[in-house]
Each structure stands twice: as C-alpha cells, then as structure tokens.
Image 1 (tube, rainbow, N blue to C red):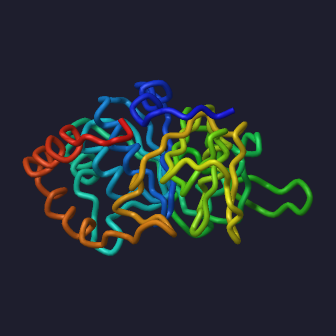
Image 2: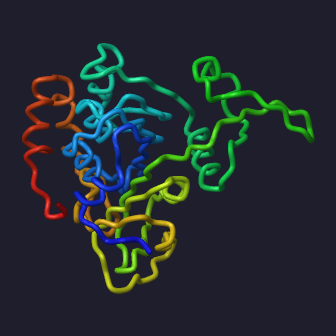
Amino acid sequence: MARILSLREAVAELVHDGDTVALEGFTHLIPVAAGHEIIRQRRKDLTLVRMTPDIVYDQMIGAGCARKLIFSWGGNPGVGSLHRFRDAIQNSWPVPLEIEEHSHAGMANRYAAGASGLPFAVLRGYTGTDLPGQTETIKPIECPFTGERLTAVPAVNPDVGIIHAQRADKAGNVQMWGITGVQKEAVLASSRSLVTVEEVVDELTPVPGGVVLPQWAVTAVAEVPGGAHPSYAQGYYERDNSYYQDWDPIGRDRERFEQWLAAEVDGAERSAR
C-alpha cells in the first residue's frame, strides 16, 4: 500500500545523492513541485532521466543537482533553449554535465522494457541518424527470425520515478487522465516511486480514458495542489504560458538565476512541506 506523505518527507526518504531519477510528464502533469523540493534538499550527483527535459530540469541542472542527463529532446517549449543546461554543457557551470541522447521512440521503448522486466528493447529507429555513433547505449541487433537489422537500447530502471497526477485515494491508488505520456511506465520501471497529486479523495470517480496506478505499484503519494505549475493539470488549471516566457531571461543569466533560486525555490513555503 502506498503511503501518504508530505512532499518534504517523500523526497527526503526516496531521493538520495547519486540516484537515477526520472521526472516524467509530457506538456501536462509535469512534477515541477517535486523537482523544486529536490533542489531545496540539496540533492546532488543525480542522473536525471526524462524524454523531454524542459524548464524544471533546467532549474535542477542550474542548481547543481545533476551530473548526467539521459534524454531525447531538451528545450523551453514554444520559447527556445534551456540556458542553464547549455551553460553546464559548454562551461561546466555549476558542475560538469554528461549527456546521453536518444530519440523519443528509443526513450519510450527503454521505459517500456524497464516496466516489463526486460533487459532491452528493440526498434527500427535510429537508421540514417548519427546517434548510434554518439551514444554507447544504442546498438545494432539482427532479428533471429528474419535477419533484419534492428536497433537495441537498454531498459531504463530508475532508482526513483516521480510523476504528477490529478488525484489519489487514501489507500494510494492514483488516477490520471489527459496526456499521460510514459508516466505509467516510468513508475513501473522504477525501484521506488513518488506521485504528487492535486488532491487526495475518499473514492476515485471513473474518468473516460483515465489511467489508474494501483496502490501496490506506488511507494508514496504526496498531496501538492498546483504541483504541476507552470504546466497544466487537465480538469484543474491551465498552462501558465507567461511563466515559460519569463523563464528565458532568468535562465540566460547566472546572477538572475541565483536570485530566482533563492527567492522562488529556497525561500518558497509550500503547504505540502
């Protein structure tokens, strides 16, 4: 049975220095509050995994939490580059950052293999790209039945998988709907998992197209209203487009970033804490 904890308690217990941590959510239900709590607790030497790292990973990288990023695309959606990410790659500030780049399909298949208990996944992607020459975890493989040349990628099995969802019941069963991406696979592939939710309710009401993660698949649930902001949570609030636009000049400048970090993350008080 998943335990209901505060966000501070959950991060303190589940996320350790040196862990491989996946914060997943595509456009929708991005676990931003959990990322900020990881920064507040000064976690470091993390291998961060995410199909589409956006501003929350930019913030975590800028705060010095990460030593490696495993990903398939990175940027500030609709705005431009991730400048803290770029600074870490180009100038090793605040610490050097190693990268491991895959395609979207490759990352999705790695999560699916991890969730299925398989050592690797096989796909037809990467043909005609230079990624196999740049990434050690992309290898050619021959189909034993047809002889077709395919590509193998290793399973992703994070130490901790973190997602945001709309709600959970008091037993820890989690319900989400809308764009759900690879959240389910990320949780099932991980050794430990944390789900932040908009609310904890007595009973989950069925929702068309909804996904339910049963209590036995989740380590901890934390009630964090607004925990996906500035991304959106369908049925609760819209995407805060201005936040993404405002982040660009903050992320560009180290001094402005450090001021933002002190005021908006280190100085922030959330009821979830």
